[in-house]
Structure formats: C-alpha cells, structure tokens
Image (cartoon, rainbow, N blue to C red; front, top):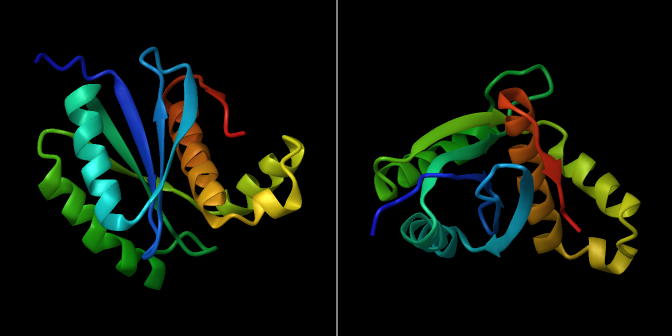
Length: 148
C-alpha cells in the first residue's frame, strides 16, 4: 500500500496514559483519537501509520515554567526514543506543552462538558493532545479544533 503521509499526530505522554490526537487528511482539524496505555499507544500509532500514513508525530515536551528541561522531560525522553525506534521514517518533533492541561480543562468547560465527565482523566489527556497538535499546526499553518 502506498502511504499518503498526510496525517500529523500529537502525543501527550503520561506514564499511565498517553493521549493521542490526529489531523484530518487536509490538516484543517485536530481531533482526539483517544487515550491508551503507553504500549497500546505505540501499537495504535503503528496502525495509524499503516492505515493513514503519518508524516509527523508531535510529542508534547513538558518544559518547566521557565522553559527549561526538568524532571518531566527526563520521564518523556525514553518514550520519545521508543517512538523513534517503532516508527522509523516518521519525523518526530517536540512541542512545548506548558499549560495544555489547564487549557484543556478550560476548553472542556467552554464546550459544556459536565464536571464529572471532565474528571475522566482519559478525556483530559486526549484534549491536551489536541491542544498540543493545534499549537503545532498554528505555528506551521492554520487549524481548527474539535475536542468535545
């Protein structure tokens, strides 16, 4: 099968859960894919690459408030390497993810998502991945968001 390499995927890494978001083929919308265990997320990314073709993976990079690489980056680095090994040929870039969780909560509130549903950690992780992807796309060309 010939890959079209049209998708960009964002990863919001956590040791227990990994949020994934993906663009549509025209890169107009960032949409949540879901939340998975770290192992399941790698398998899901491999399948997305086979089915849709992934051009870029945008990895949320948890810088400190001052913009430095701290302990959180040291927890993410091994997963970054794992994705590089598992998805050879796919460009993986780092994207500053400061404040994405806070922004994700605010966006879910504005979208009318009830408090109980907002507390579902998986929903928040996928929403944070959408914001990471949206930030990346806004820096490289426009995008709309859809995280509800």
